Image (cartoon, rainbow, N blue to C red; front, top):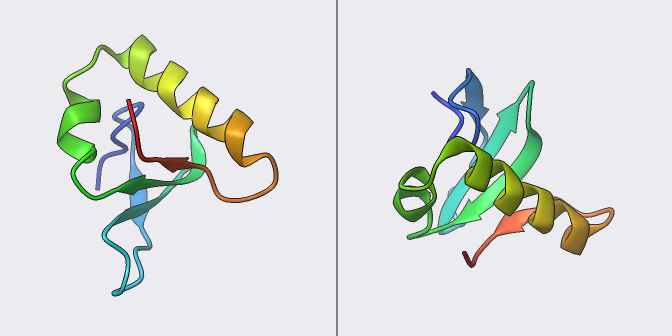
Length: 70
């Protein structure tokens, strides 16, 4: 799969009960995107997508970052 943030190679590790996707990317790291936000995120320019992920990482601190608002 392709990372929704950097467009690089990534792996989908989504558990069946999660409404969204779990991404493992060598560039962006491990993070999650809530259902409905993947297409919205991809509509933004790459620098905006990186900023959204950076903010999610700041909020998460030591947990897996979750993009659930833009």
